[in-house]
Image (cartoon, rainbow over all chains, first blue to last red; front, side, top):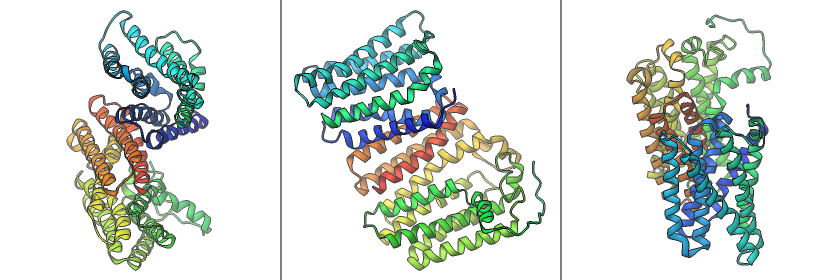
Length: 201
Length: 293
């Protein structure tokens, strides 16, 4: 499916928001959250640029699954490090092992459902953390209410991940053309929610 | 294929001439080089002087455009046999070689003259860029050796050095690092280009890295030069005192460049090659903007 000029504009805005978040939005945090958010939003930025350059065909590459795992893993690591001090080390280990597991199961010629299960577990845990943690913290008053927008970003990243994963698995929830039509807007909304959420926290 | 033939041109309006001349100056390439020049100046953070900025932009634009037109004038026979370039105004006969030569010389003289009038050292650097591009790269080496791109690269690094020199009044380490960044960035752009249009260059008998050393070596050179370019920009950024957030962003963009460069080595494909070619331009523009902030 050919990318429309509007799609390119939406992706460019996504990239600019991600760039803003890397350059300005995470100033003042600790070294690990800064590194984690830089990786998460950095991957989002570079992916957006590559989508603009190469069009939707780039989504057919097997590397997309690995790259798209980095974003939720890195952002969730940053959130856990900032807000769940007692889980820092264990979640850091989970992040590294999870990334390696996805990379290996997607690189080796494995049969059966192991690659899908690994991907579902890693994405599921990271996605739930990004969705639930900011929402709960905002609801409890531990952060300002605006931080809940990060949870909204988490929900949107989960939705996008689901749509793309099922599409690549050959069992699309929506027709491919529909998914590709809404993807740029979904990415922009997700990034805007993250940026606004962190700014309002 | 279009033949070079003398064409009788009816008297054209200025608007028609400008429309014909625009492709002669390769607006995107000239714009990118101009951006590096402005970034070189702004990287010194010596305050915004609108008249100097205007002079910098004007003189660089004229000098870069002039050398590009002279390059196109000299290479009109090559352009005519390459699919990618046979529609260019001189190659397709819509602008005569004499007219192009005059235009190139006028633009070059005006550009260098303006630069010398502003600051002799700045003028010397602008002249060096023009000399390396037109004389060393185009007239002397381009048809003889694939290593000509080194001189093309040095020439490409002159605008950023010129901008820096105009702001600081001297050739400093940061200026040299920025020049190196452009010099080593150029292979990620030009060599991917020469792989993409391999048949065109072969048809025109222009020696390129892919035709001389093969695709594998060329990809390794691209990856190595991308590392040096990214490192040069990073070190220059630190020395200039770019804010931590912008350095992070620069690191992200550099990581993208390195990943794509390594992908060309380990997972070579036309798609990866094309994405590196496009990404490299965006990378240079974005990095220069970050250095200028």
